[in-house]
Image 1 (cartoon, rainbow, N blue to C red):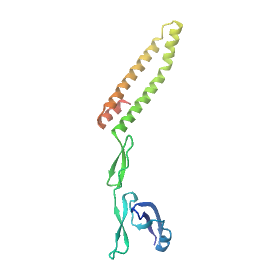
Image 2: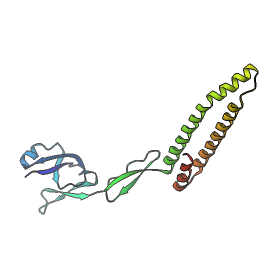
Image 3: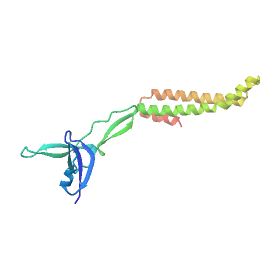
Image 4: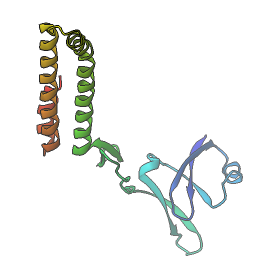
Length: 177
């Protein structure tokens, strides 16, 4: 019957993730990487490691599998980590700063979209002014409406920057549409 064997480093007991399904221990031993050993019974490569314990005679080291919490990964801007006991692994989550940044980016994208809406009415007003005519009222009104929407988005961006909790950001998120 085949057994699943996992490779671990003798120096620190860390599982490498490499495994082998084989029935013959002699065949397994011929495939042992340098500085490594084998162990079976692994259920979570990322949350277990091997401790070498002396046998009853103090002659050989017996590999013992033990649960282990790996160190928390280093965070990056906008990403933090939380240990999940059920999954036995670190799970990434968005930080408050990351949430703020994501909302600000959405607001900036909306501002960019509003800028595109200004092209035609601005051109109509400019052409009328160059020709000495009165600017079209609809074009002027469109420019005012778009600029008012942009001012609202800028205020929203300030509120996003000032928010101190996720709950505040969730409320502001609804204002982004």
